[in-house]
Length: 335
Ligand code: SF4
Image 1 (cartoon, protein in one colour):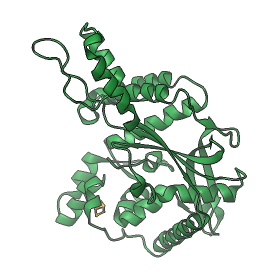
Image 2 (image 1 turned 30 degrees about the vertical axis):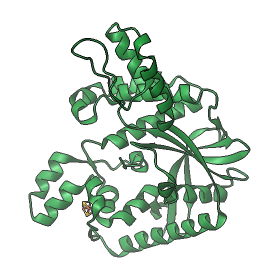
Image 3 (image 1 turned 90 degrees about the vertical axis):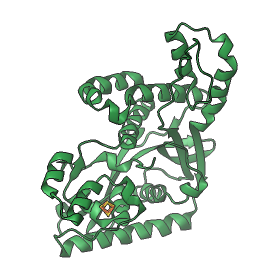
């Protein structure tokens, strides 16, 4: 096998393979992509871009405006599917910046870059590991791998320990020798939920029924309806306290034996994937389960299984995108 014929794996490819081999095949061998990216993927992709702007000391909202303008047609047509995602992200990122104003991320420069660090390492003589790290930061006295995570609700430790990504990336950092000592992972959580807009009462004034939103959303509503903030002080204070449910940073120290175990298992899966495609051209078997609820390829998989018009589904719901690196695959699809 020459260098150009190395089997490329990424974190998302290994995750997809483990979840369902057929899903992996649709996405990474057939290079199919649904016309409409799931909202969490769209949201995660844009937030990562804005975090990168912040790492460069640039105004992320200029970038957000450019993204909005560039995709205005798409967003207008699909606003019912995504909701007003650009406005949601603006509210959320403005609140994020205010929330962490006293503790901005302390980025470490790696190879001339601070965020979205691309890497490529040869895992074996046949397998290449490719991906992008969110960044490396100083957190208190620790040096940490940074992981931006966008979720509808911020996960707890029960979820975090299952995240293989961090361990594998830490091992990659050690192998590449980019950072001398890495102490752990800093999880930078941002909620992806659309902040609820307040309601106008028939009698006038703003409803103070409990809603899950951000203080600036209320501020905008009061301004738009020419209402004074004074009667709503307590309501606004509740939203300010609620900010800690929107933004959290959690540091988890490294356990070398855990990193090594997960990394070796990652390599083992990568070998299994390479081995399968060395011998087979045909799609691997599907794994039906609860995860099918979140699978972008469910309509296609179901049509194939049920003997429906597969070509029609393929043509009307999917596009072929063989760009080598489908970055969106790296973001959480969880809701
Ligand atoms: S719907 Fe389920 S079985 Fe089918 S490809 Fe998706 S994850 Fe696999």
